[in-house]
Image (cartoon, rainbow, N blue to C red):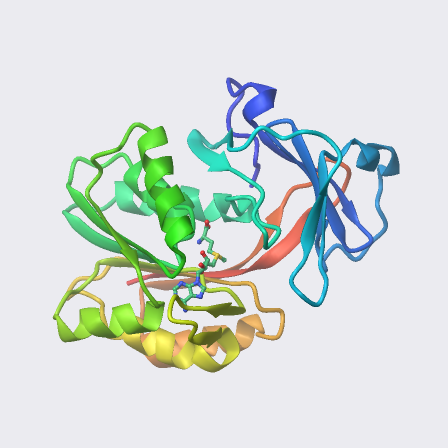
Length: 291
Ligand SMILES: C[S@@+](CC[C@H](N)C(=O)[O-])C[C@H]1O[C@@H](n2cnc3c(N)ncnc32)[C@H](O)[C@@H]1O
């Protein structure tokens, strides 16, 4: 996997992981260099001279964390990853509006959808600012797609809508839903709505819009069971990502097998971001089911 979008993308719009180590990551988001925590960056920093170039640094504390800014940042600003444009801004939680480790999954989604021989109804749950939604919309298919983008954070869904317009698709066939994932998915089951493709990218911990606590390690079986109930008669895929280091690939795999039974293929991969100063930065796991 490479995060270089394509050779025609100017440097001021590209994403680059410049260095990582000592529990931190140094990234350039279209020339805006940010220094953020990365517990998985266990080795030493390889290019210490670069770190003072950060425009802002995020540190965690008991109340969540905060940014310290060293240079003015004009917000929002834009980056392009694999021809998908994103609007970015510093969030109080230390995020910026994109998870670059999902790039390999965005490519996979595009390929799988492009090979489908029919109209598809798809859902992106925990959809954040729309990376997977935009990748699915970008698939080269002659068949119509209809999509549901679901996230508990109103601001994430608003950004996803703006990103869709930014990518030239303001009228894309997307239902934009702000809701707790489990509440909405269960309602969809009752309403008899079914999906040919499901994307699930849950955080390890989180909160729904009603303040309901989300903990992947506890909620995983219920999430997968509900996803299974939502599959259409001829489902195509399920894409699941996991950012909880407490959950092991083998356990997730057996939960997927238990829930979905025999499938055409079940692939597990580790997600990572290639670094410019050495090793790639690990960024969770992903499981891809083709039915
Ligand atoms: C890891 S991010 C998803 C990243 C996204 N798939 C991407 O590639 O850009 C997790 C998202 O889950 C949302 N979230 C967390 N708990 C939720 C819940 N209970 N219901 C709905 N959304 C939730 C957060 O608002 C956040 O946008």
